[in-house]
Image: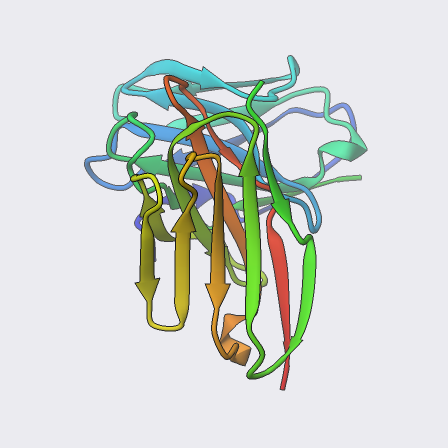
Length: 114
Length: 111
């Protein structure tokens, strides 16, 4: 158990819909990262937040947005969903933002868009 | 932009054989991390290398960071079925803000 929690574990929805994925980082961690992993693919970095502020942006679509709240939990919002958005979405957390901290990954949310 | 390439994409070995995965960056890295993802699981941190030419060992696993800090390798001696999974490298460019993951090498071990 990494200490990072993600809800829900599974999500099935239809094209055009909007969903929200939630992540609670490890106690004390200030950074939260979101990744997308398609079937048998690598980890695509989406976005990072540090202490409530956006820190780095990866290949995140305009239909996707995220935020980190004062209690440090984070939400990833996916809208106008397409079939290709079906994937495993991981949240990870780390203590800081130097890039030399270990990232602790949550169990992931498996999204299926039908 | 920064790219991290990892080869091979897949590797099938017989139990007891050695295995190596290579990671190459288009830019100089400040550090490199390695993660393992078991089938159906989430990535788990293995190790971090920071110094040029650094070599670290964890039991049967040997990690190397190149002298130029642009490449790295993970070598597993005498693979076991418990080594099955996908191994990812992840690096951040010197002065950069993003840690970029390689595409991973998926290891299959036949008993």
